[in-house]
Image (cartoon, rainbow, N blue to C red; front, side, top):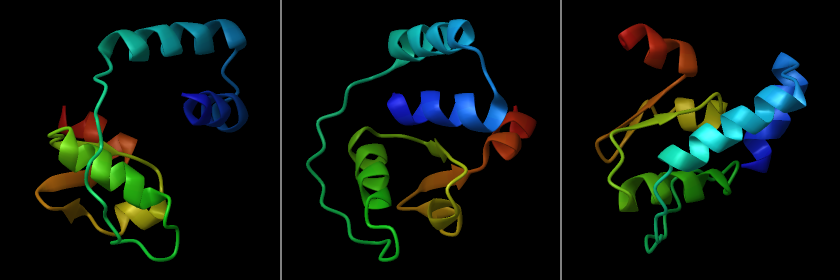
Length: 91
């Protein structure tokens, strides 16, 4: 959750009050996933593999990210990887 707050604050200048609302909304919608997979697909930024593992183990249909390493895959094991604008446009 901290990374989301940091990106929204620094990149989009979202106020603390709005960050609190976003965090509350995300936590109310979130699904906790016990990650069992060990994925080593992304070599350059290995921490992104945890995102892939969480998506696979959680049964996700899509990963929404601005991360260039994830976006370069476009899809991983049936999970689409889209930037936020493309996801919203697909509606």
